[in-house]
Length: 199
Ligand SMILES: Nc1ncnc2c1ncn2[C@@H]1O[C@H](COP(=O)(O)OP(=O)(O)OP(=O)(O)O)[C@@H](O)[C@H]1O
Ligand SMILES: Nc1nc2c(c(=O)[nH]1)N=C(CO)CN2
Image 1 (cartoon, rainbow, N blue to C red):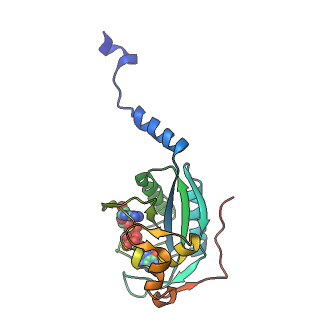
Image 2: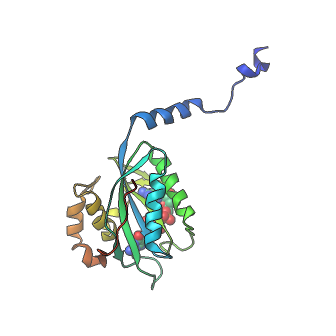
């Protein structure tokens, strides 16, 4: 009888997973750094929209924002428009994989089309680091495998968090200095532009 009783039928509903999520939302908050880039459309509006969308995510709070940098495109097809790049520092209770899913959803919401590797895009959202987590999973490599060699990442990251460290590589400020500073890679501060930290 018990097997036909609907109140006693096993279900695929993942109650434990749900409980784990609620628990993590309530109790655990970690620091993550996220790189934002845009070289198509209204670049500033898109970066601000991405910041707002991240802040609107349950379990995510944007705690610090960099200045806006205009940067020469690195890699991909020649003659791409320049990028606007920025970095947001977050406190989040989302696990890394959920944060990546949200980052990809925000890219999609801003019309990101994936065709050519490193091709022009309305919006790129990369997770630079998540607390001290190290992972070589190709779906989510942490820290970001190319962050240490990219002035378009390091210069805004240093703004948003002057004490930032890239796990396994050292202080962001030293990595940036080691590249010859922002200008050596065509990274220019746009002091006339600013992103707003959500209220
Ligand atoms: N730290 C990370 N942040 C974002 N995506 C990552 C990360 N590690 C691995 N990935 C994976 O990389 C895949 C390709 O991402 P994407 O197309 O945005 O690359 P890209 O930004 O063009 O290049 P790059 O990885 O050099 O910044 C994503 O589908 C994602 O699963
Ligand atoms: N200047 C600049 N170049 C890039 C960027 C970027 O955000 N800025 N993103 C890339 C893939 O993530 C590839 N090249």
